[in-house]
Image (tube, rainbow, N blue to C red):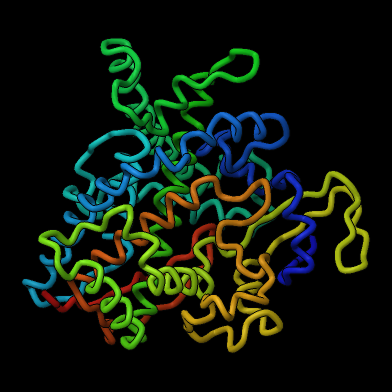
Length: 413
């Protein structure tokens, strides 16, 4: 195995569509051969079929859904404000981002945020990502038949059933709707519309299993990583109130003469400082701390030719904290992403969504969602850390805090 954490060493690898190594297959019972785990022609076909779901015209109407989800999130936070207590950030944000992904991608309403942190899907995803990462650290558990006999193996399959029951319910309801009403009459089809109606060059659509795999993949990647990013960004802003105040001033200036606090599509490019804050938060805390590839052809990295079969780990966390790439890399500094500081920065110095042909297909969706939710939160409240609660990173498939992140919210308006 080779570890890479410098732009010059990861560039040539990420420019290819090299497959994921065997460790990713540990998630196959959960995510199947969706876009994250698929390789070769299966991946190429899926990428072509799914790309239209993330076109500009598709993303634009989702702003309304983001704002309505933000309304519910603000109401949940108000409960802790009224009771003068801190709240655990990741659990509330995770429910909100799942609410968003279900509505934007599948037009499916399940009152996720109202059902609370105990929602079985959220608990299942948290446990599955933890078990996936832990299995990868223990070579004695690599064989499937061995893992299935362990308590964690049985727990993994049980939680897969929880996740699949929700995705299958979403798909079943949409199929029934299509059979009754025909093709969607709304102007903009959502992710599931495209899955159910997409045809490849040979006129073949996706099988029921392929549709479920893509739904499970998108619901995981579309809510868990985004929840991690927003939670850690709020954590950094609570640590650095001077940056929090600059974001609030920017949001206030945009919303100053409006009757509503809704963020509109045309507001997104105006949130320049918030964009820097989001990127710096993802640099510092890395929602996805590492990705892996397996070489199918000899590849030269930093003057060394790596043979076929070499497993390469791109350590995004170490790349984003490499002192050869970033000045004072452990300090939260949104100006790392100012135009003047980016002018001479290698484009592969910052890869929170990976890069190249296998980059995250939903990165613009995620950035838009993060802008709306953070702008709405910071318009309404100022956030400070609960100093009685210790926060420590838990490195897994998705970065989270070992015992959560607790904060106090103070009303602004």
